[in-house]
Length: 404
Image (tube, rainbow, N blue to C red; front, side):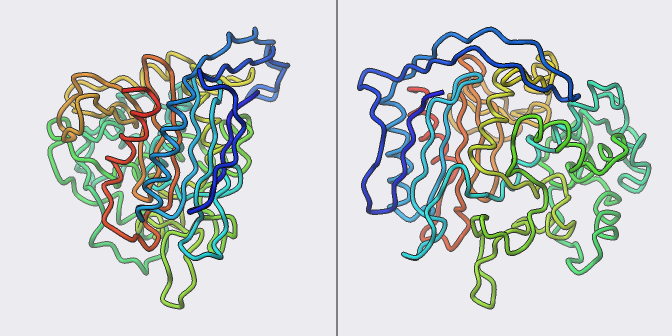
């Protein structure tokens, strides 16, 4: 596989492989046999046709990222772009911190706190697999696995509704005791009364995904982080991806500075994630841009990558489809509109990306029409130099990539 890889520090110069001004042509040889998720050998896959991608768009996307770094939006970023199963571009720009001694970003080694990207990449993916395995159904009541949900008030709320943020659960946990033990914190969160009318109102909810994680773990009958490692991350070769990266993780990009003056590396930036020791479901996943690109390529390629099938194509189609009455939400995924930013309760007139973002400055977006995808990871919450509209930055980079 050939791709452009660029690395630059703030104020430095580009070091790049130049593959021609007209465009980038990516040739992929026939795939070799690979072990499938069950450990057996997958059938040999036919060679894929070359992907032709406009190199000018990739250069423009990198320059947009660099401009934001120079303007103080975040200290560094990793960007990976692909089409279907094929990666066409990878760049790492800037550093993980603002000081001259901060290590440079490395797309394959720098581990980022993905924040709410956890909802799509971890929790939703677990539900997708459980649905395929017949252990869960989208329209089953959540109370089948979590009878204590909402103190019994949520008996009619379904898995589908939690995935589409129409389950009535609270947005966050502002009144949670941060010093409670993880088991007590989880019990407190899943038993909170509903905040809005399930099936009627749309409210983006972290708590709903804590409940989903709890339900999925009980349906899987094993720790969900282990289940995801066995079924998704290990088969895809995502060796740097894990839930609950430990405090002091040397490869992790910092997200804040402690009162001691030390950068906070590892440990969830999200308060719910911290209370649940990284096993929350709404947050807590850590990964590199290179690893997350493998996941994006699998989704964009209909559930398989390099001969390894992780999900069925029809499952992906179901979960990435916008839900009636759910505004901009699909099932665990979010739609982004070509006409611009819209409120959560408004459906897109023209969907130009499906994906998810995270408050730490992360994004995974896929164009459903062309199967073009983008992974953009930053630690924009680390000592920000200015107020940042991260969603606008993501849109600017994305629109350079797709030529919008």
